[in-house]
Length: 151
Image (tube, rainbow, N blue to C red):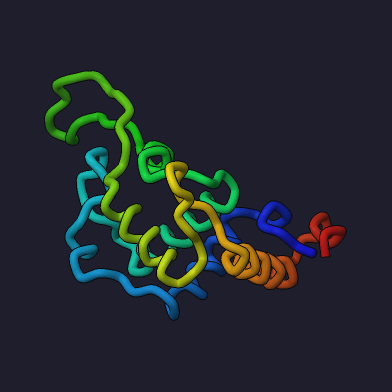
């Protein structure tokens, strides 16, 4: 049985993002929203919403139960100011929470994650099956002989 731990994260996220395009929809405001204070522009990728959703699903599966605050810290970055004005030194900052919260709500409506009262969100059995099926497909598509022992 292939799990999410047996395949590279980037290949798994790409596969899951493709599968999520049929299940969740990107809100209209996402074309104008930045992902946090550390960014100057909104994301330029066309499928950013689905890639972030796949990444969130993987993080909840690996670290769950996990809350929005902890996830926003993981997606945060270094705040350095703009390119023109460097007034203060660099420091860390968390990412925007609305994108994370909205995606978690959409994944919850699909039955892939659930709310654990007072603990955050955790993956459901359907979500684990969804990720494991995607990991199995990724492993068969990869041409890496060192990973064949997991098949």
